[in-house]
Length: 281
Image 1 (cartoon, rainbow, N blue to C red):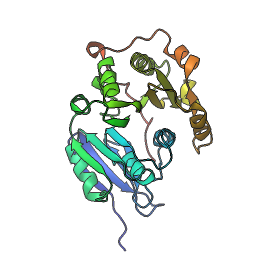
Image 2: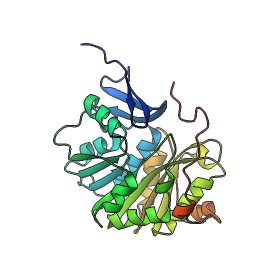
Image 3: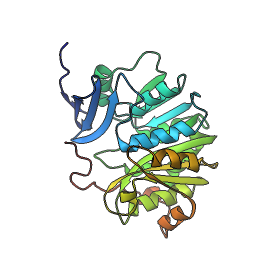
């Protein structure tokens, strides 16, 4: 059998590369403009390689009874890691994936195709525009993992955006977002303040070194209108290969401090990662 070879292609927002993993037969790493975007194992979609993806997966595992199908809206597609994960762990789920880069969707569809019965619909569109046109109370889960040039776009950081997310979620729904920042956490604090203005419950999951301000890194924001199973989530994240901490309640209020919710007129993208922050070997 021929060995898989790397694929490089110009896409709408830069240059995408698909690189095979020499240690896993049908696993691929997707980068865009040199930044790692997704990792997919076609034979084992339950395998989550990236630390932030594992943390999102932990939340997805506890939000409903194991195996129960969910209606999920993904803002940001990449190589469709989490849609594949949910299709495998919660068969029968109905999933919509919104990705602004049509050429990237086409590349992933060509080399990392979905099964016909996956229940995943792909849409080439702007994330916020799609969200604003989505029916109210139509999703159990909303996952925002949108990065343009390694930064979260400004129009996905405001109170108006958070309000649209809350509108689309059902009453027992959960919002998850992959964010990135470093001390003094101006962006992260503003996002916590923004979502606290809209949702009743917030959690933050991140590596202790990131929370202590020792390095730039990802943080997963979880928001809902109902209490979340913090104890179960803490157990899962603490015992992971890449341990993380779950912050809630007073610790989050302390982190927010005097940060104010973000209005559309004042919204800015997440900070530029330092060189090498998300590099690959």
